[in-house]
Image (tube, rainbow, N blue to C red; front, side, top):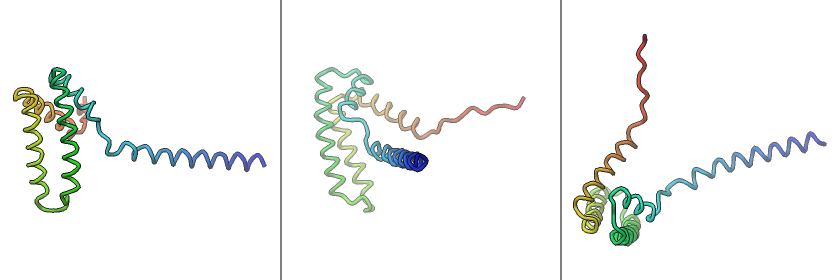
Length: 131
């Protein structure tokens, strides 16, 4: 009887681990940094004042609502979706530029480009030369 209990307990344990392991990636999927985290990072990277941080936060909250509405209103499969999305992003970028200024916006664009570039390049190990 002990053997059956041990086998049953082991099977339950393995099943629980497998179920738990499958749930974790689904929880993380699609969740990026919050608006507060994005504003805080932007403030440290660009040296924003408290007034500008507050303005950026309200702007990002407004843009988040607009972006969600844009995504639900437009068909992602349509051929002109990409162009609409680019225009939408440019308009939102112009709003942000008006709040933080030209110099800081340019620096932000450079930081974003560097971030994209580092995400695209897989980490390459240096090749070892045969001796």
